[in-house]
Image 1 (cartoon, helix red, strand yellow):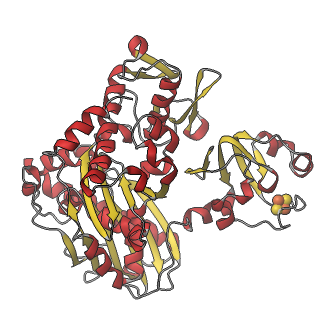
Image 2 (cartoon, helix red, strand yellow):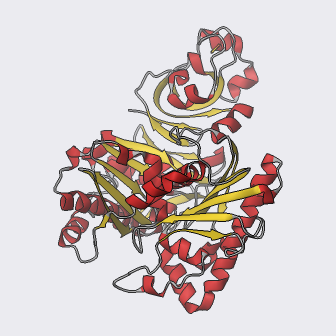
Image 3 (cartoon, protein in one colour):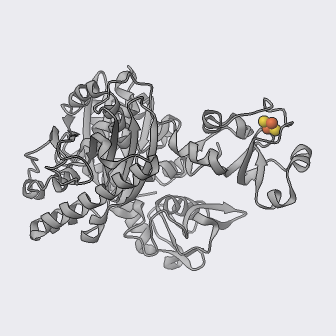
Length: 499
Ligand code: FES
C-alpha cells in the first residue's frame, strides 16, 4: 500500500484513496461543497504519485497554483507514495490538533495553564493547555545536552566526568526557553502556567534533577530513583514559573526503560484492550513494551544512533537538506529532500529507504555486502559499506529485542494485533521498508500503527487528568526482560544482522 506523508507524518493508505478521505484531512479540514468539486476550497499541496490533474482542478486552480503543486483534495487520489500538505492557517491547526490524544475526562493538574514536556535524548518538545483542555501552543528544540554526546551513555560519562551540573543547567535553560516560547505564542504570562508534567527516559530525568547517574553506569544498572513524584519549579530551577509550581515527573520502569515509555503506553491505549500489542520507540536506545494477557513486559536495547542520522557518514537530523525518502524508479535511486533543496545529507527515514532500495536494486546482498563499497543516493550524498554495517547493528538490535520479548512471553509474532511505533523517527518511517530491511518483523507489517510523539501525548494526558498518574504507576510495575545476558537475544541478534 502507498505511503502518504501528510504534513510530515507518514500514513499507509490503500491506492485509489481520495486525499479528502484520508483521516488526517477529515480530522482537520472541511469540504465546503461536500467534496463535489464545486467550491475549489479544499486546496492542498501534493507531490508524488497522484492521479492526473482533473478538468475540475484545471478550471478551479490558477496556473501558478498548478505549478506550485496545489490540488483539490476531493478531486485527487493517491496512486502511490506521495506527500500532502495543508497550507496556511489550516496547516497550523493540523499541528495543534494532531489526533494523537484519546478523549479524556478533564481533571487538570493545574488551575489556569499547564505545560507538558518531553525531554528526548535528541529533541525537547512541549505543549501548553488551558483548563478546558484546549491546546494553545506547541514548541520544540534540540536537546542542548547533545554537545556532551549523542546518546545516553555518553551523557552518563560526561556527568561522571564532573559535568553533571552543566548538563542539568543546559536542559533547564532550554525548558525555560520553551515555556517562554509557549506563553508568548498563547499571549499569556509565563508564570500563569501553574502546573507541568515532564516526561523523559530514566537518564534524562536523572540529569534534569541532578540525581547521581553513577548507578546507571555499570551492572546491574539498578536506578536508585524511578520518579513518579512531584517537585517544585524552584527545585528544578525553572525560573520562568512561580517557585512553588508543581511539576510531576512520571514513573520510570528501570534504568533504561523510562517515563517516556510509561506515558507513551498511556497515549497508545494498548493496555486498555484485551488484544496482544507491542509498543516500540526506536531511538538510540530502542525501548519496547509488550501487553499480553493483561500483563506488561519491557526491554531496552542499544541500537546506536544510525536511525537518528548519526553514526552514518553523511547522516544528519530530519531538517532542511536531508534526504528523508528514497525510491527506486525504473531501477534508479530517486531521493526526496526536506525543503526541496539540494541534498546535503540523509536522515533516519532516508537511511531505511536507501537500504531497502539498494537491496531491491541488488546493489546490496543479504550479508550486507555493498557493491563497490559505496552507493550514490543523490549527489553528493553517498552511502558507504560502514554505513550499511551501522544499520545492520541497529536494526538487528531492535528486531532481536522484539522477538526476545515475544519469545519470553511464549507467543508468536502473528499473535500481535497492534505494533505501535512511537517517537520522532517512527513518525517518518516507511513501514514497508522497515520490514524489508529487517528492522521490524515482517509478520507484524499489517499490525503497524504509527503514533507519533506518544511520550508527549501521554504527558499531556496526565496533565489534563491527574488521576491517570495511577495508571502510569501500574504500568511501571511491569517485568523487565534483561537482554544483555539473554541467549535468545544473542542468537536473534546474530541472525537478524542479515537482510
Ligand atoms: S470540497 Fe469543494 S471543491 Fe473540494
